[in-house]
Length: 246
Length: 310
Image (cartoon, rainbow over all chains, first blue to last red; front, side, top):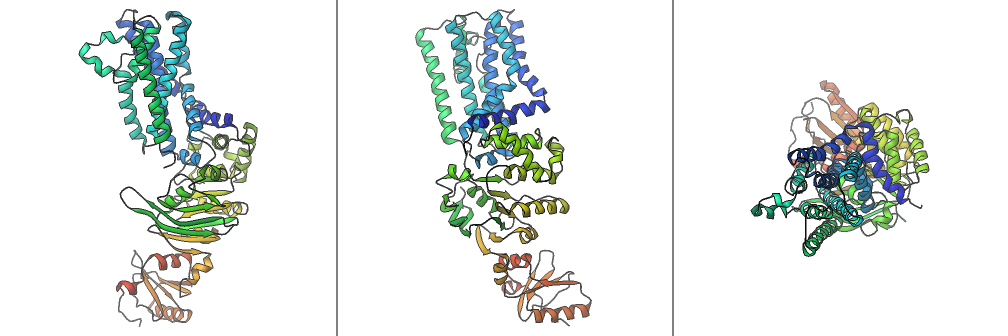
């Protein structure tokens, strides 16, 4: 039998987001609120000066939240419905399942991406190369967080455990790094903590791309290198060490 | 070629506990139901998960239709489908949506998946619920949705891990009727701890206890493993003596069960009637065989009462 990759990809999107949103539309609002609440606070506190930075930061956080949501959704389907076991015993690869599930998370993020995109068109002004850089940063963070989310989900045994990991990782990826403001706002002695998070490197590249944070070529290259290495390592770990087939 | 050949399959978890200990099984090539029975924790789910390519064994081998479960999982997944223990249709989908998504995951075209989803739900007799949210369905209907899901595909080898656990007797019977129909064109590997279920449905049975296969074969084969063809169950707490020719088992509820010859069974029955003791007498069932195999008779434990019959 000839199997359709498009069908396999679409199945995850239908099961995890389209059908769910039909029942629980509040989920889309939830995905929308988190980045916007911080964006608004940043806007007021900075008298609007940090709006472009906060918009790109908001987009980075949407991508990161998508990955973290993937972790809980995968764990929910695996532990509460045993869907992952049904899927493992079928002609579907782990990669295709993950790809479909990852994209399904973006469906929830559509309103947030649309509004942030519209705000970016109004308030973020950069070159074509700058926009390409921003998109690359967003995709890198999305790829990193989804691989991390997939990896963790294969080990969790209960949704409570998944929520705990989401809390820990969200803190590391969103509270610690200077995503909504430049790293120069953090006192020097504490910056080392911010650099523990890959989101910091992503934010610096994004802030540089919109002309907010000057970086030397060496600093920019280092940021890219760190971001790529972390993404590749997490991707490798997700492929090789995840408990797809135990 | 045999349908299923398992050779010395062993699964040992990290703390050293054996979930399966050198399990060997052979099931001839045919459709029908193979029932794996055993107590909770006997290792049934571990065996299903290995055969359904979800779990790797520590050692040993298993082949289904000649395909190596360990070395050729991708090839095997083309022809199998599995309903894990405690599986549920996703709450926020309708049965039609769930079966449809499963078929798309298996790579069916959108059109074919839509047709098969409806046909399969109708075959299980739940076509009327296909657009109802799964969370609103009864327990029995939810299980039928899962069975409809796995039979909707081209897979003819189906693993059902305790599909009727927790169902009321009526729902269980309805599902049994469907499984009896499905076994005509599928090979169903069923685990259960309801012995009645295995007795009613299975063409072949294996008994798993503490990770070891204690017996396997048809029900007639298993009956031959017990020397005594009749079973008497004393329904009250009345203490009885071990038969001259037979075995006696004291159940957890304190009731005595005697396996013996037809002649002695009649004699015991006559004495029990005389004493006004409530009891039942039947040719041995799978329950008796199971207890005979997994539990030591009273004689071996030295735990029977010496009271005379009369």
